Image (cartoon, rainbow over all chains, first blue to last red; front, side, top):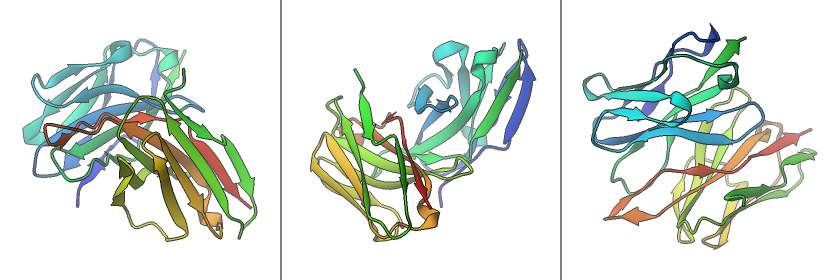
Length: 115
Length: 117
């Protein structure tokens, strides 16, 4: 069965620290990959997505992610976090070209940035 | 302009009651979804409709019945509510197929927090 793993459940960083959140998926075929963010009390917003092409994807608010096909990974990075980045981060995968369009989410990583 | 809207935002009800949550999108998308986010923040797909046709029906109790009167609306009706139904329910939408494949960036609504007492 397809699944997504986010190994960091809770990350605490100080402002200006660098961030890397891990995401691995299990699926043998082509996938579309996403990172969503959920700020406290708000809905999910798309940070960035990968469909094809350059495996290094840049998103909003200075975030980027790198797709490494051989490792089935799509890790999220930001060189310098801010207090306003405190949120829950979800990695999601959607098999490409399937009969359905569902997103399979990881369990989320709660990021707390201390001022 | 709200792209994907849900009503109500909060819903508190007793066990055994029947309730509905409504979702509307003004993005012109063909496909709509319902997701459930449990107390541990885990998000799982429940249903999806494409042009009013049910295309995803995960293993959800049949007390949950989605209804899509048109492609801009996807409502969720829940019968005989149970304690375990307490969760945040998110509606989402995306464009339909492109070249035979689903073009699947999804846009989420603000969520409905359902509390069953």
